[in-house]
Image 1 (cartoon, rainbow, N blue to C red):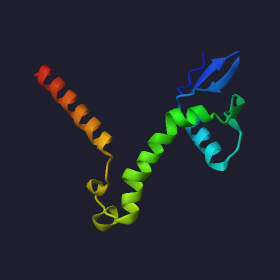
Image 2 (cartoon, rainbow, N blue to C red):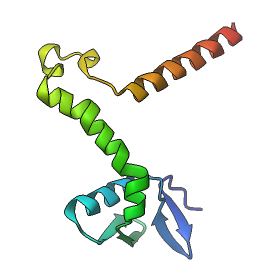
Image 3 (cartoon, one colour):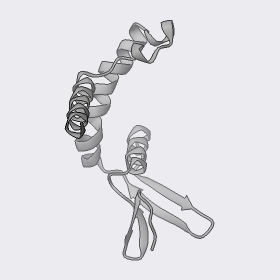
Length: 119
């Protein structure tokens, strides 16, 4: 049985999962290059797979566009305008978006509660 975390079997073909990083990468590259089609080739010693992936504008809008715009405006652009990371080269100099900071705090609370329950 084939076990690949980013691919599934469909009609005796191996296709990339639509929630995998590979699919996101292909759709992003298709959008940026204004192309309609990509041939995704997967080569191993035992088999080779070629999948046609067509640009999906709905997928781009629903899953990628807003997150990339937010990353650019809240993380990349501030660093380009007023670089912090290059001054001390500390990971704490990297600015995180507010939603990322909130998720980190939530995760920390959950882990803390789990540790308390184990004690």
